Image (tube, rainbow, N blue to C red; front, side):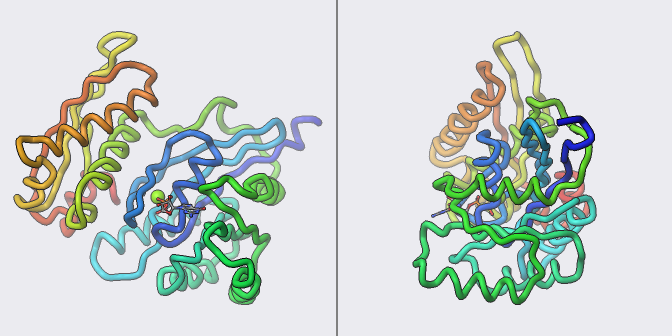
Length: 296
Ligand code: GDP
Ligand code: MG
């Protein structure tokens, strides 16, 4: 093969919250770059993941889940998702049987208004009756012009080869944008912030998720084998601060321990993680705060 046959491009991942975008991306990259959660809306930052084979390179752009509903924060997320489409060579649209309804409709309507090729991954087929699969595939094929439709299970890793084959088929000829061993070009400190936020979601109740941002104030490689991190968890109300800290700071300790272990896996060093919790009243309705936390 000569160089001119190499295929490459940007793949925008689009779908409703909780369809399995992060799980699929992580599975394809076999590396934890996008955070996963059983609560919606956990991917607010755009995280680039890079998949490289001998003949192709796909640069994945993870977007916030398209999500119907009011509020400034949700609007910003839709805008962010839409801006991904502009930069993409093709779109990987993900749906799931347990996430059908208005959010799926919103994603479909958005996709109808653009003309990039769309590959549809029908995820979580491990949870479905085979008999329900075909009518749903038919319906989606009717509603959207698709380059390919591939049923997959991101969780079990089923049919991901077929999905990657279709993705490569749709990529234009192009250069290897990133070195072969690149998995993400996001700074480690941003990934560290996402990993902390993931544990806040995982370890606290219903009230917390929509109102949490994490900033990393310091990320210092003190020694080759030790990274020192200072980070702040921003919440909107005193009551939320209490929840995140917990009785005798037990919850915050639990969050810190779990996040530290994941960050250590990423950096390959020991990590000293210091966490602070701060109340910023109603930040998710404040454009300046949204900007500061990286959402616009
Ligand atoms: P995102 O919001 O679209 O990024 O969704 P996530 O990747 O965070 O996944 C949401 C939930 O769906 C998590 O609990 C995942 O474990 C689950 N999930 C993702 N893919 C599959 C799948 O193929 N099968 C099943 N059964 N569950 C899945
Ligand atoms: Mg996600």
